[in-house]
Each structure stands twice: as structure tokens, then as C-alpha cells.
Amino acid sequence: MLSRKEANGLLEIIDASLRCTGEEDLKRLVKGLQNLVPYEFALCALTVPSCSSADPYRIVNVSYPVSWLEHYISEHFDRIDPVVKEHRLRVSLQYWQDSYEKHPEARRFIASASDYGLKTGYSYGLKTESGDGASLFSFGGRSMERSRRTCHILRRIVPHLHQALVRVVAPLDHLQEVTYGKLSPREKEVLLWIKEGKTTSEISSKLSISERTVKFHVRNTLRKVRASTRAQAVAVSLEKGLIDID
Image 1 (cartoon, rainbow, N blue to C red):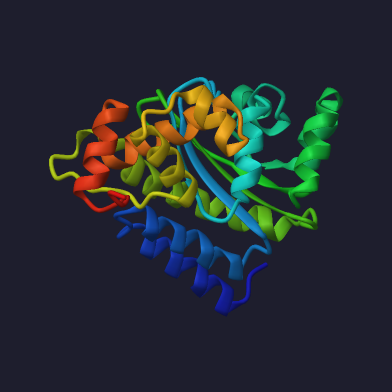
Image 2 (spheres, rainbow, N blue to C red; image 1 turned 180 degrees about the horizontal axis):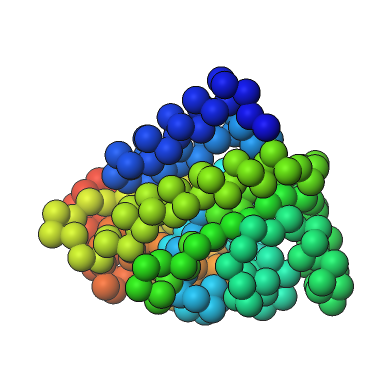
């Protein structure tokens, strides 16, 4: 099913996954998989088993459109996302079209995802050893055909990516040596308005995004700078040079 070159490429990714120590390493691993799986967009998530955006979760966005993630959060699409619904029921490899057909009530979600180029794809994840979490890896694009070869590759590589994701994401709150993640342009914007004393509602109005999306960026920022409050996040970000004083 795989050529010798492709099989060697898969083994190289598996080997590299054992040395993965950070989000950027994980992103490079997933991007390397693009030589074997013809995807356009990829995302990794570690969640509680319910896989709901209302619960604690961590996302490593490899190449999903940020505008789609913001729209997804603001529209509460986790409640109707067919892939998420199926993942809550059983942890197995999904071809998106199969999950869509099982949930025709999600036409609005399907049409909206398609507008962002997420028309077809695969998702797969595994439960953590403790059973109190689950990973979900999604690979999508405008035209990903159903393929036994792709299924074969994902079934073999995702368990290794899962272990790398758990190592990278799950222990962050318990690390003795604190590392600080790079803030996205939107996270910086939100944080700068917080520095000016603006409320969630005021930031929502100024940036023309929903309050839920503002909270999404705040939560990610608190995690990245290892802060427990907004004021602390501003102080740490200024100290570490993640945002400018002026």
C-alpha cells in the first residue's frame, strides 16, 4: 500500500514523535505528514472525554484558518459538529462525509465549514491512559477523497502523535520550569485592550468579534503566559516582552 520511500517517511515521523518536546515540534511533525496525506488544514486537540468547548481543552492549531476557529467558537458549533458528536460516542477514525450523513440536522455547520475550505477530511483520536482525556486530530481540505491508503496511514501514525500531544500539552500546568508561548496577533490585540482597562463587552465591540471569542483568546493567553488573572497576564506579558508598553 505504501512505497518504500513513503514507509520510510512514516517511520521517520514516528521516530521524531518520540523526541517531540514542544508545540512547534508537534506542528512540524504534522506538517511532515502532508507528504503522505493530502490535507490542506490540520488541527490537534486534547480535551476531556465529552470533547465540548465548554470543558477544559487545549488546541494546537497547525494550519486551520483562525477566522474559522473564531467563528466556530462564537457560533457554539461544538454543539452540532457531527465529527465531535461521533467522537463523543466512540473513538474511531472518521471520514467527515460519513459523519455528516449521520447528522443531517447539522446542515448549517456543514455549509459554514465548507465556506472556509473545510469540505472533506478525516478525524481520529485516542483516549489518554487515565481515561480522563481524549485527543482529536483533524485533517481537512477542499477535496480529500475517501482512501484506504489514508486510513492506513492515519491508523498507524495518530497513536504516536497522540502520545506526543499528551506529553506536550497535558503536563504544562505542572512544569517546574515555566515556558511562555508566542501570542497570536489577535491575542495581543485583546491583551492590549485589557491593559487599557477594557471589559470583555468593550473589547468585543472594538474588534467586532463575539464576547465568547474574546474569552477564547483570553483563556489561551492565560495559558500561554502561565497567569491566573487578566491583570497578571498583562504584567507577565510586559515583563517578558510579549506585548509593547506603548
